[in-house]
Amino acid sequence: MTQPHDTIEAVRRALRSEARIDLPHHPIRLALAEGDLVIEGEVADVAAKKLALERAAAVADVRGIVDRLRVAPAERLADGAIRDHVRDALVEEPALESCSIRVSVKNHWEPVRVVDGATATVDISVEDGVVLLDGSVPGLGMKRLAGVLAWWVPGSRDVINGLAVTPPEEDNDDEVSDAVRLALEKDPLVDPAQIRVATRNAVVTLDGQVPTDSEREAAEFDAWYVFGVDKVVNRLQVRA
Image 1: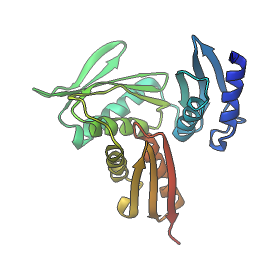
Image 2: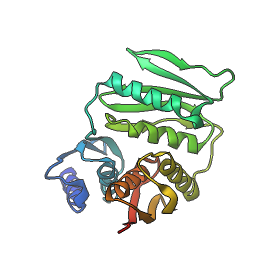
Image 3: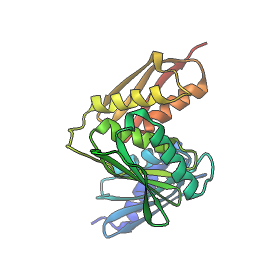
Image 4: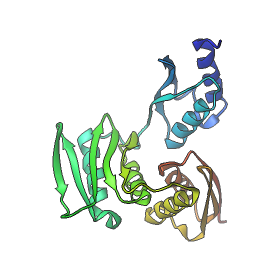
């Protein structure tokens, strides 16, 4: 029978094997609680977070994961400021104009926009830099777009996308690719004209050309931000 210490060491080896996780500069704490792996710490970016979860889940003796990993924000903001930025981003997004929106202020829900007869409601709350999206929307594309907009807020340390899709939709690789393309189109820092997106088993591959290294990086992170994406392979070339 595998001992808890052996499981934790196996996970730690798996994390060390991925340079992007960068354990020396971003330590991750590991523990076992009732058979589940608790993984906690602050990593450099969303890619490191998702790769850490992927590597940990691949260890044979890991049955479940309690995810307490947070991303170092581009800017440290108070929860109220993050909430207001997320609120504004969702209110200003034309694709979400049919959604009623509420925000949590001091544990009370305040309406931001009430749409008569709305079939979609998005509730926004923030705690310690972690954005929680709750409620119900009529499509996976809308759920994923709301999540990307929340990730784009500079102070966001994590986005827990709890939006239900009603009626339920069956997810597939094409849905993921469509969501990534939409994120690229919405990002003012990216020109998606020569970017090709393909998805297989939740792994997104970006091909094509971009004019700068910063745009190449921005496009990759847009893909990582999409709910349901486990890995991104960036094959974008920077035009000379």
